[in-house]
Amino acid sequence: MTAPKYAITRHPYMVVFEEKSAVKDTYGGQVGYAFVECMLTRPVDRESDTVIVFSHPIGGGAFLPIMGGLAKAGHHVLFVNTRYRGNDSALIMEKCVVDLGAGIRDACARFGYKKVVLGGWSGGGSLALFYQEQAERPTITQTPAGDPIDLASAGLHPADAMMIIAAHVSRAVTLTEWMDASILDEADPNKRDKDMDLYDPANPNQAPYGAEFLDRYRAAQIARNARISAWVTEELSALRSCGRENEERGFVVHGTMADPRFIDPTIDPNQREPGRCYLGDPQLVNNGPVGLARFCTLRSWLSQWSYEQTNAHGVKNGARTNRPTLVIGNMADDACTPSHTSRLYESIPHEDKTLFEVDGATHYYSGQPDKLAIAVGHCTQWLAARDFYCE
Image (cartoon, rainbow, N blue to C red; front, side, top):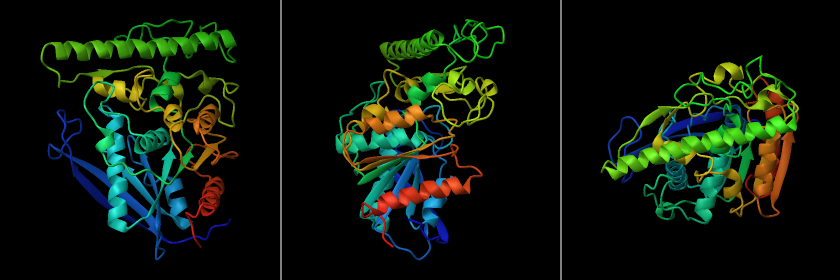
């Protein structure tokens, strides 16, 4: 299907709802309320009973190429920023689910949408799957830190279908796969196991990496994540034991962009450029200010970054969903590599699932209008086949 091109309009608005919480984890705003920014991007003079809803834990995706591309193809596209837009240092994944649910519920009431297609872009993919799992089969009554949050009473509206595009498995798994396994002391990133340091030219282990080294490296990454999680759990326990159960602590995590895949293109191969990641030079990003999980709080670590304790795990969540699902992988993606795409696709437990790969496409389709058009065209065709798009 070659979708027509429509002029589009953007409608920003705010959703506000009451929330009882012992801890305020965002800056500004009235205590006891949550504020969610939304952006509806839609074709001019083209009505629809279906809305495609995207979100992302840290937000800010309303102007990504895929959003405008889908709207120009005739779709109504809503982006729901969570309360943590632009700052994930204290982010709680369970509250992201609540925020997404509030945005969906409001859009259906405000604009009269009857059908919801849940979109998941990049880090929004695992959030979408987490949301859908809890909307279909709510089980969670507390965060991994033990704070109460009842998703069963959050009024989550299950989506009618899902589109997971250029997505990774989860923030916790992705961080762990990117962690610098050479760091031995969290308080001093200069203390390193030099045989594990990917960026040390004196390291005897150089790309292309052998299977034995990769196994040791991956095990060390998981162990490092577990050490941080254990320390966080101890800190929370110590605070609670002396009657300070609502207090928090901030901390820094160094070395979070040292995945061998960024250096060795034979690992999880696709068409990405070797020696690069989606944020630029991985060696600089490794300890730079925009690396994953650089600034954390105790509760946030357990909820979004802990390999073993997070509830937001796309593969595990996806296995408990039951809606038509499209999974799209970009074959030159330098953030979400093919193994993540395949893991997400394989997790969907039913037969109404589709895998599509866009040859040569990068993570954002930046400067690739032809690749964007292919992805949008396939989404449109898939949606039309399921009565979510009408000419």
